Image (cartoon, rainbow over all chains, first blue to last red; front, side, top):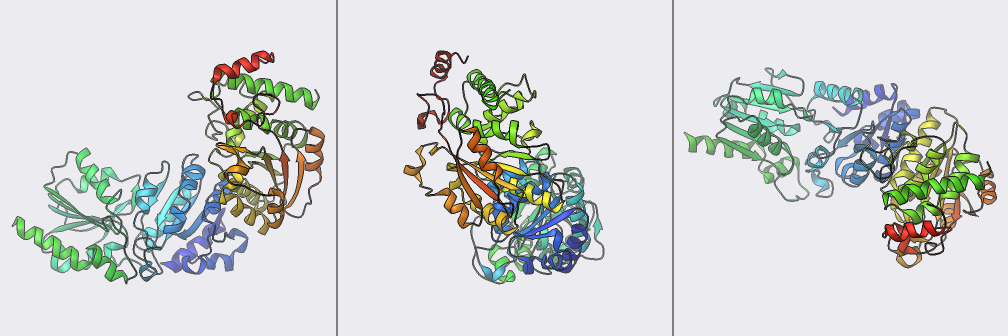
Length: 306
Length: 253
């Protein structure tokens, strides 16, 4: 996916976009743009606050800046700049948050980013995209760049890419697989969907689960999700994000707003803590969102309700 | 009309809107008013652009726009007004970017200068900073960038009135020599009296042309009013009655 992203960025850099990076070019893949279209690339140095302000200034001249950096830094070091220079004037700035979730792994807590969605979804005018594979990445970038105003795209380290099952159906802001009109539903976003997919044969199929992978968190696809959750009794929300201000909060609010008669909603997420250097698998296991952890919790729940 | 006459007219407009609102950053607006008048009525041409990074001095910018015939009926700091508490591009396209959170206007102006350079557009980008504002680390990030990219179309103006919200800058977080610091960042920098039109014009006429340039203007907060001048108490209007009395004594109401 990193190669695809690099080629997409190169294409957009020739179409009125300027690609910015905060000294992470070989990690984010923007070095490809720098090598092939240097006149539409700016390495901003390790200056995230200035990078966001310069991006807003570039946008004021009619260019479309695509800002790249590690999600943990580009969002949180420059949070107030995102509020003031981008969100409130609705500047046409696109932010790509790389290495989000646990994907920076052994880099440790300084680089993990488990609260980007909570921050960025709280900023008016931002649209928020969470692609998981090549097709959804292409769509996310196309929407982010073609729609005026600020956008955030959540990305992961390297070539992380979800391996979606063949029965996957794409519904625009979400994709689904598994049973329809289901009583049991898993809702997730981002690459944690891989852990859910692992459970197909021993959990999802035997218990008739519908799986919804949300590709656009803002504006939240309430109508589509409301229809998909119409028959749900058990809803499990899985996310590689903290427990506050993420998908669990969004789905819970949707269920209340739509008066959907769900018996139980469970949030499986990174909770309310910081983590340490470890592999992606170890970190997901610690957070209780690895395939094994998800299986254990849901299996127990289904047994209790049997 | 001479620049002095323009200044009197703009100042009268500015004080009238501050008096009507009973609030606003009067000291900072007075310290930079000569600079804004010189820029807008003598120095800038139609290709140039001005960003008020020290957005607290919004009344000075608004009065200049009124003097140019724009927004004659707007009320300062009222709901829906083009003259928001700090410059808001949603209501006032002439401010180019929203400012008011100190340090951010400098980066945005730098981005505009870079964008113009990439698009081969003519004209200079003037950005006015406060000396207190220079305590923001983001300013220095922007200077590194402007110097690295040789943004000769960027002119940084510093209104050194020596006072910030809580008192004298020297007592709160001393900046030392701003011009030496700018020069050490590779930016050609002059100093001038910010209340003398001749000095302002002379300083802005002698840019190096090889990269960003800057002028540190020595000014007085609350310039021109004995009780207000160099007085940290008048960072903003805390007592509208006393403010109106001060204007009334000078036949400025």
